[in-house]
Structure formats: structure tokens, C-alpha cells
Length: 65
Image (cartoon, rainbow, N blue to C red; front, side, top):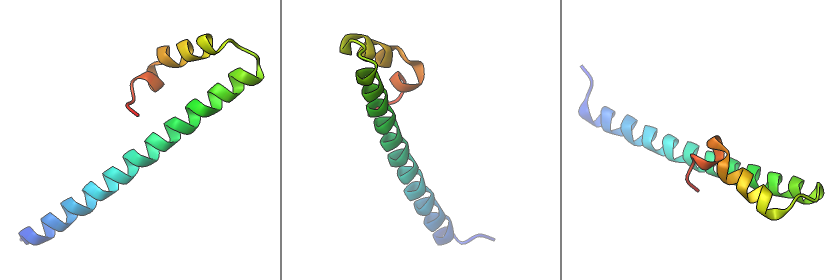
């Protein structure tokens, strides 16, 4: 039978892993947005178009920063 203190420790470890994964994904999203803005600048696209495209992108828009 599993000790309740073991379950608590596993749950705590899982929570820490989840929080680290979320932080990593948020950092990745921020790098992706910055890279896309940089590419838009290099391609001399209007900033408004780049911003609109980023805001309309379902995978980027669906995430919170």
C-alpha cells in the first residue's frame, strides 16, 4: 500500500515539473514571437501586418504570455 506522504511528494514533484514546462513553453513562445517580428523587419513588412498576423495565428494567440 502507498504511503500518503509518498503521494504528496510525487504530487509536489509533478507540480514543479509542470510549472517548469509551462515556463519553458512561455519562453519558447516569446522567442518565436521575437523571431517572427525580426523576420518581418528584415523582409520590410509593415509592423501592423506582422502584429495582425501574430494576433491571428491560432497557436500563438491561444497561449497566454
